[in-house]
Image (tube, rainbow, N blue to C red; front, top):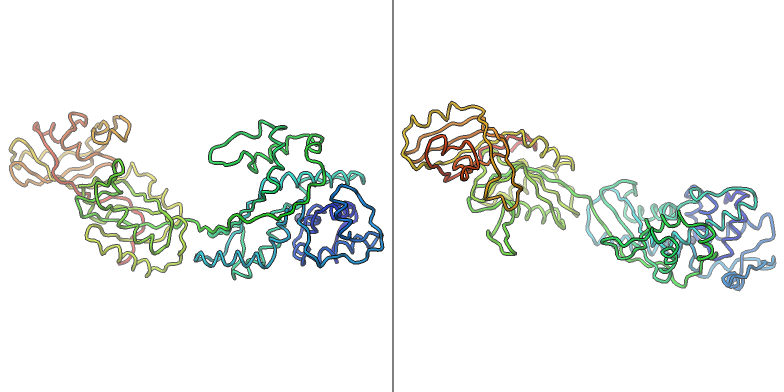
Length: 512
Ligand SMILES: [Zn+2]
């Protein structure tokens, strides 16, 4: 039943008698489809031996022979050992270090299942990822060189790319098993990832000779504990001469006493993005937490008031908050509010109806300091959408202005007639500690002044996004020209500022 091509039989025989597991044998015999890998381990072993035996008198090795093979003595296997002692626990494979043996078992799959279940994620399907210890690459290389040599005896080639990769074979076996437990499909792309990280301390030093032979492939890198990363090992194996390799790492690779250990089974869900618009009604509320030298200056922030609720409901680890511009702590944001987007990282709950989102919005709106509207789940590219063309967008403000000299209604009329006023603003003194010094041109599209009393008036402005309104009012010691003070030939200051509208038509408005 097993289709082992004639030409691969010497390779199969060689590996089977040298401590390599039947599934790895399939890989090096280039069996490129899942069914044989999924056969029960013992059945596959018996099957393989049968196919080798069918045209010769090769028998599966008894334990003694296997041990001799380990000692490096190639033994002629006599025909009188009939049935393989296949019922005993197989020894750990010297190529996959047990990955295609113990770590394909139903017990192991159950372990993954329990881990995923207890993590409490919502998901529709999953992608399964495996992190393998780097020394597997060395053992793989060694086995490939040997198999290639065997094929050359028949004047045939065995390219490394023809060998079925360990990861691929592993997924062929384990995908259906995990899928069945979890009740959803394993796919190649999913928002939900289940990852298994393996290590094998016993053979950690397998790689070390590479660092002496291919010094330049192994440079210390930041954030990495070991220089023997998979990438560095791949590079070194690509460079090293076959003869050098065989000298340092003779075939067959040692048979390990232990199998790979599972360091971690990780679950992760891709970020979910939530957008909306917020109003801020407080003049003592910063947009983001205001902390100087580790000390909080204000007890809350817009960001916190919104995300506290989101984090609890989506059950997330952390978030990134971004918005279309920002206002100072003492500035209110009125009108339809300011667009914002929040990236929720590693959310455990992700399935929400429109009604759920409305309820969530209602919860946030229990605060008297802020209000949120149009709260909705959006796609990842929505953040870029919100930021795109930000500079060209307009914003409307209303400001309460004080003048030193007393004014009459008529003194304000010239402001109403000004259209598309160009101003030059050097980076304001108050933000110079966090922004580079630059002079920027900004446009005040329109202004409308409303007389209050002889020292006060209200000014409505429509400006290009990014205009510093406070500095336009008081002039920032001549760093913004022209300014309200200079145009009115007096000292002016701004007492109150409100954002009336942020003219970004995103996110889409929702019905209330
Ligand atoms: Zn194996």
